[in-house]
Amino acid sequence: MADGTAPADEFIPAGLAALGIEADEVDLAVMAAVHGLLWPPLQELLALDTEDVDPERCPDLSKAPSA
Amino acid sequence: MSGALDLGLRAQAAAVASGELDPGELLDAALARIEARNPALNAVVETFPERSREMLAAAPDGPLNGVPVVIKDEWPLPWRAQRFGAAELTVPTAPGESGPYRALRDAGATIVGVGNMHELGAGSTGAVSYYGAAHNPWDTERCPGGSSSGPAAAVAGRLVAGAVGADGLGSVRFPAAYCGLTGLKPTFGRAAMEGHHMAPLTTMIVSGPLCADAADCRLLGSVLYGEELAVGDPSGLRIGVVRSEVSEDVAPEVRAACEAAIEALRAETGGELREIELPDLETAALAGILIINSESMSGTTPQQLNRLSPELSPIARGTLKYRMLLPAVATAQAQRVRTLMRRRLAALFAEVDVIAWPTVPAPSPPLEAPVVELPSGAIGADQANARSAALANLTGIPAISMPVGLSEDGLPIALQLQAAWGADELLLDAAEALEQANGRRWVESRPPLADASPAEA
Image (tube, rainbow over all chains, first blue to last red; front, side, top):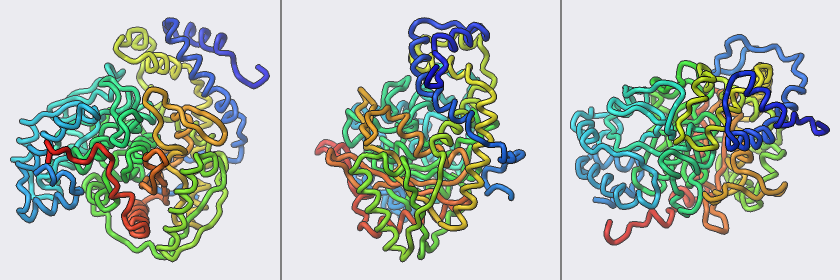
C-alpha cells in the first residue's frame, strides 16, 4: 500500500463477491493488469483538490461553459 | 476505372457530377478493389453489393452522389445491426436507420461496406476485434489505430475515399494518425449520432469523417453535420503550445516533425506561437475514461457479465468485469475535473485560436505487441495515447489530426489541433493552410499497399 495502490488480490475479489460476478483465472489476470494501470492515477484523481470547482449543472458540451 | 478510386472524395464527387465517371462503374470498381486488397487489410468486414446498388439507384442529387464510402461497425444500417467489433454487446441492437446512414443516403452516397473496429471501441490500436485485427496499409504488421481501424485502413488503402468513424476517446484521431489520414472529431453534438446504441446516454462520443485531406473531411463532415462547413481565413492564427508530457514525452522524430509543422503553420498563416499552461492532462484523460465507462456500463447487470459470450476476447471479458468495480465517487470527481478543464479551456481560447500537440506520441506499433518507446520508457500504446486525445471528448471541443511527416520506418506522424466549441471550421481552415505550407506532401503520400498492382490497374 506504500504506493497508494489497493492490492488487486484484495480489491478485486471483494468487489466481485459483493456484486456476485464470477471470474476465472484469465479474467482475474486481466483485471489485475487493468487495476495496476488505473488505480494509481485514480487515487491521484480523488486527491485532486476540486473544492473550489462549482460543478456545471447539466453542461451543454457543445458550448463553452457558462461563467 | 479502378484509377478513379485513387482520387480524393471531392474529386470523385465532381467527376460523377460532371458525367466523367459512371457511378455504377465506380461502385463496381470499389467492390473489386475491396476484394483485391481487403485480404491484406481486413478493413471491411462486410459488403452487400445488392444493398449498395439499391442505394445508388435511389441516390438523390446530393454532394456525394454516386460516391462509395465505408461506415464503421458502430451504427445500424437498415439491413444490418452493428456488432461494435465484438461477439456480443451488453445492450440490444437491431437493424435501423442511424443518423450517419441517413446523412450519407440523403447526400447521395453509396455505402459499400462496413468498417472493422477495435472490440467494443475499447482500444486505440485496432489490434483486437471480433473480425480479427485490421492492418495498417503503411505496414500490414502494424496497428491501423482504433477504434475506427477499418474506416481508416479502407481510406488509406484507397478502397474508398471517405469513411465515417466515431470518436469517444480519440477513436477517429488515432487511426487517422497511424494511417496518415486527416480525421475530424467534431464539437460534441454537431455531427449525426442518432441510432448509436449509446446516443441517449453519451456525453463523449461523436461521429466524424476520415479522409485523405482536410477538404475531403470538410465535404464528408458537412454531410454528417447537416450544414456546410464554410471555408474561412485562418490568417493571424494564434497557436497555443503546451510544454508538458503530451508534447515532450514523445518519440524524438514525432516531436521534430510536429514542431516543424507548427512553425510552418504559424508562418503560413502569419500567426504567432504562444506557450500556454494546461495542467492535469493525465487526470483529464482518466476523467474521460471514467465518464465513458459509466455511460457505457449503464444498464449492464452482474448477471449479464456472468454469461458473457466465450467469443469475447479475454481482455474484453476481464475489463468489462473490472469496469463494474470502479467507485462511483471517482466518476463524480471526474465530472468536477470535466468542469475544471472546460473552464480552463474557455479561458485559454480567449488567448489562442488553436492548441497544438502530437496526435499520438509515437508512430504505429506492431500489431503483435502494441507498445511504444517514449523518452520515459516503453509503454502500452493505449496508455500513451489516451493523454493526447481524451481532453477533447471530456470537454466537448473539436479536434483534428493531420499527417505531418513519415518516420524513419516509413510510418505516418501526425499533429493534432484543438479549437474552441463550434470552431470546427477553423480546424479545417488551419489544416488546409498547413497542407499548403508543406506543398501537400504528406496528404498526398501513399502507403505501399495503395499502389495499384498491374492486375488492378
